[in-house]
Image 1 (cartoon, rainbow, N blue to C red):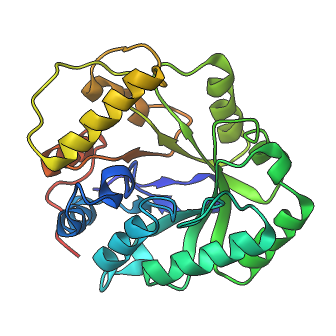
Image 2 (image 1 turned 90 degrees about the vertical axis):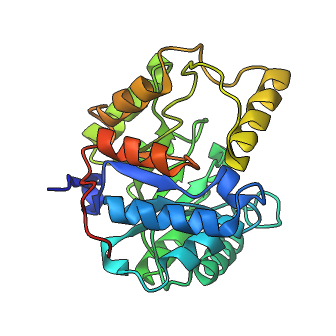
Image 3 (image 1 turned 180 degrees about the horizontal axis):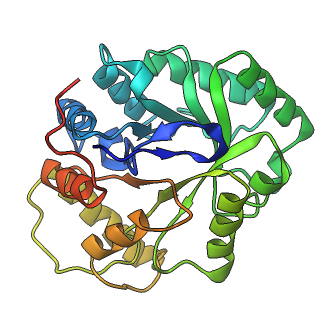
Length: 281
């Protein structure tokens, strides 16, 4: 049987491995049809959680996900998108900005609602009472079933302090600080659903010549991080072990995979215990 977890108090059934339609999947580096094919493979492997956002490729990632999910059984899938950094725009966490961003996202996704709406990296001073009221109206209107935060900064504590938030998307890797680890622990204890990202941050591995345009995207990003200074913790183990450790984290409900390769996706699905013989839907 395909393993299913419950995303905290939301009650949403999610696969332990989710798929992030971000990064290279929002750029011309990876052809649109390649992304769509990979999303279909993910569904057929048993993945049910798909994360995206308007900031990725100025809405391109959401558009690709929407096209891929057209005709699929929407009731089995969990779609998470973001707001606060809209397509072709600067930061905007105003009530009107968040509402307009979500409406545009739903249009690109081809759906009437998002299962999860995540505020995309807000600062604590952007979390105003007026914004909370707007988010409550969005939830009440059924445009987003659940509200959460995708953050690593000073706003993280808000997910524990306000009843409106019941999902946290945050880093989950071997290099977490004690403060970051404690946040995951406290969120899980409070019944908040936790989606892990950056599972392989800092994981070492043998350098390999790029075999695809997606590999070139990751190579370019690594080069940029080298110039800017490492954002990830020091290398600890290989990517495969890093993903396995993230999937086994006791306080994380689902871990996002951002791969551009079908073989990597299938391997991650195997590590998550998903049924590789699942019939396509």
